[in-house]
Length: 355
Image 1 (cartoon, rainbow, N blue to C red):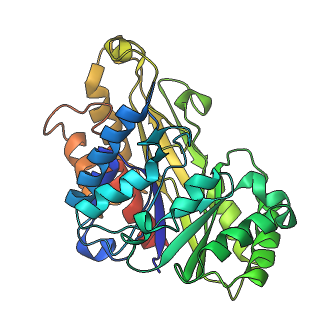
Image 2: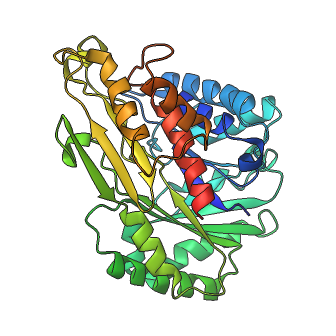
């Protein structure tokens, strides 16, 4: 099992961040991908997105031992050919001669969960590993969801013998870390008494989907990462279990493609860069790209601010080298999208060194 599990959207920047990891670091991660929800998504657009994602897995995941893929954000009501879209994804991966670890959850439809135990999915899965994803709502009481969980495990008998329990805190900003950790401990101990999980993953993020919820324009903040506090407190009572740290890197789990008309995007966009260190996110936000005198060059200014900090990791990753380059004003113009790949890469590299 991996040292660290980054939770990512199955999008170009996230794939690129994994591809640009060093060979050694790729061996230490098991990325967990979620299909992104697009505006006005229907079966046709989802089908195209799945086909694109399958190609990107083929192009970008070489050297990564394994990864999980889920459709958590995609409504189960969107079917492809009358069947769960997850089956179509598996078919696309099979066509590319790729395998992945599937995911089930007690909040999915019966058809969506059941398809994971049919040949449509199992023929693509090579190592008999599967994830059971639990949300914070489920942590209230294991007994309330016990029957549903044991039903899924029973369906996997003879098919999957390596179950990974994923405790997903999603956006956990403002959550009491001690109280949440106590819930996690109680849930995991009860769950492990029923089934021998191969590993337990505890993940979450302090980043809300809208940057303005944590800082205004033309400002900076050192945001304490509550997902680390929750994890640290939870593991104190879980000795003897294989616990893996996960997080959503520097992108909020609740982020989805903006509803703003792309033609108006620059009128409302302010540059933002997130750089993680110790147990904090250092976030710098500029002013409106269209109204600020520096425009896109604010990204260069922000990079220079980060590189000058005592906690900046010089030459530690491709992402850090990118920030050094931009701080010096070199290379192409930085756009709101192009800064994500290097900063996600920097975060993953940092977490691997930290853990």
